[in-house]
Image 1 (cartoon, one colour):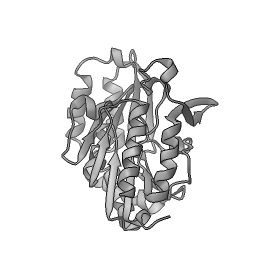
Image 2 (cartoon, helix red, strand yellow; image 1 turned 45 degrees about the vertical axis):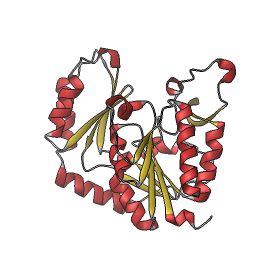
Image 3 (cartoon, helix red, strand yellow; image 1 turned 90 degrees about the vertical axis):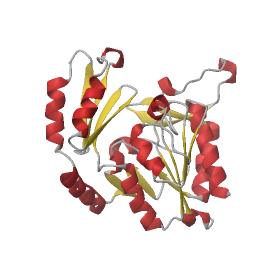
Image 4 (tube, helix red, strand yellow; image 1 turned 30 degrees about the horizontal axis):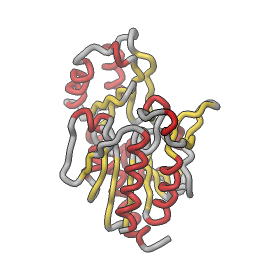
Length: 273
């Protein structure tokens, strides 16, 4: 490891930023020109997430020149299914900032602190679940999941969700200190104090990093990007769809798994500069 590891930290969302499900790969080129893919997640004996082989090499290179911190909305169990190339990251952010893993192990003190912040700054999870139970239509709801007793998300048939329903939910949630994000077939309701940037600040404090870089594709990544010195968003996802922008965040033109590879290429370049 070089001295850059302690000076530069790279925090990145995973799904649809660095890793991709088959439906999100966006392999728009002729089949004979499609990149070779590496499976990095298996769930119930089924391959679930991929990155290009080139991206896999870049992840390993990045880990050797910077503090690489995965920052995901996934639960700890979901995160642990991912098998990225290279060493296990020293720090990982899960449950949208609700958990910090240190060498793969839960930091319970951080979780206790985050739960205190939620109690002070947002309505209880039970109130949000009760509201969803009253307003969601079983015709388009496929699943409801509570993540780590911190937030809730719905798996829906997106084409059947009434126009304006998500906007109405977002307005109701905002008044109660919650935020709403729609990513693919999932609708997330997350307490506002529960952020990746809050956990990132704690990791930066512990590592003493002097420069921070970030990447993400959804509105739940916006605070992570704003907390960084520089960042990237792909040419797809919620931030792309809403036209979200910040002066220090580069909006890439490529989408799908090719964007994941390009993001990693940019990360390695800044980490070694």
